[in-house]
Image (cartoon, rainbow, N blue to C red; front, side, top):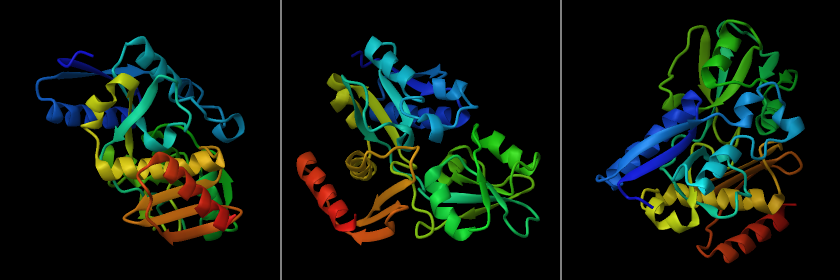
Length: 286
């Protein structure tokens, strides 16, 4: 791979591009002699905004075009939101690592003046499964689109009384306030984040692993590996009500059949032993 020019592949959405620029900045810092460019892609998931990810499944909808470009040599690294990357990725590629994790918590976005939340717009079964406990009488409906369009739909179109967004996404877009809306950060004890949430993953060809791994953050990459190990063990994905978050020795899990669990635990570095540890934890819960 040429070390003088690196091509990043990213979805075209504002948030995806913001994340790609963070990777660009990081690579330029680690490899000051390189020229780093970003190439934009429109994925099937971006085109099919009317699709319900829960009903149709979201596997590969936001990643297939980027993976194909990697294998074709059109790009050198694909940038993904950690929570959007399927556990099974294209043969010949791997995740070299992740950038440092931003705030992983969810944010409840409520239309100003709402006294009682009767409708919550979210396409995430994970969020719905946990927020039903907070708002047992509320109706839940799906809402897709980029972050700003979702905010406008709640504030201006009254599509629902509230929605839920990732704190990291709002931060990366520089959105601290929005006219007609109130933001309330949800503690992890109330809403466990999705596996990989707030992590930016760098997917590359297998032969380029060491090159991009030098730009990764150790703690962020480790959390990504652990959380995805639980997804793999359970066969879960973005269309199911499952959550996993690991930070500083504390593991939080959520699934509707066993509820929310909080465990203090350490994990081995060896991938096979990590897999065994995850299996043992799940056997003690299920």
